Amino acid sequence: MAEYQAGEGFEAWLLRADRALYRAKQGGRNRSVADPLTAFGEHAGGPAQPSLVKLMWRAAYDSGDRQVDRQHRGLFERANRLLDVVLAGASRELVLSAANELVADIAAHFEDEERLHERIGYPQRQAHAAEHATLLAKAARLSERAAGEPLPPAELFHFLAYEVISQHLLGADRHYFRYLDEPGAAPSVAG
Image 1: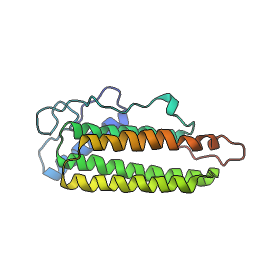
Image 2: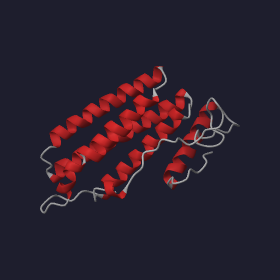
Image 3: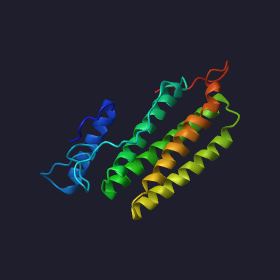
Image 4: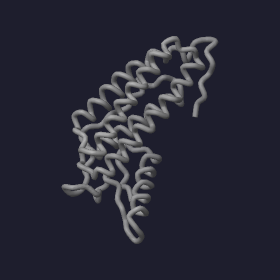
C-alpha cells in the first residue's frame, strides 16, 4: 500500500505502491508492506512523516522541450523520494532502493540528453557529457557508501539540491535550451 501525498502525481503514487508490493512478495506470502511515506511506514521511530525539505519544480525551469521537461520533473520527484526516505530514517534497503532508482534515472536522462545535444548540434556537448560523467561517478560513490553506512542527510541534500539540481539541471542545462529553438536545428523527440 502507498498513501497519496499532496501534490504527488498518479504515476509516482502508483510506483510507490508497486515497490511496496514487490517488497511484500520478496518477504513471503500473506503479508502487507506499506511505502515509508505512509502513516504506516516501515522505519524506526514510528510513522513516517513527509519531509520538511522538498525540491520544488517551477514553470521557469522549463526548457520548452516536452521530453527534457518531463525527465527533469521526474528527477525532482525521485530526488524528493530519496530525501524523504533518508530524512524519515527508513530502512537501509529502502534508502538503497531509492538511491539506486535515482542514479538509474539520472543516467538514463543523461544518455537521452547527450543524444539530444548531438541532434541539435550543441557546441558544448563534450564538456556537458564530461559533467554528466562526474555527477554519475559521485552518485555511484554515494550509492556505494549507502550500502555500508547511513547517508548523512546534509551530504545527500548538497549533492541532490546543489550539484544535480541547482548547478546542473537549472544551471548547465540552461545553456543548451536556446539551441532547441534555433532554425535548422533538428527537432527533439518528445515522449
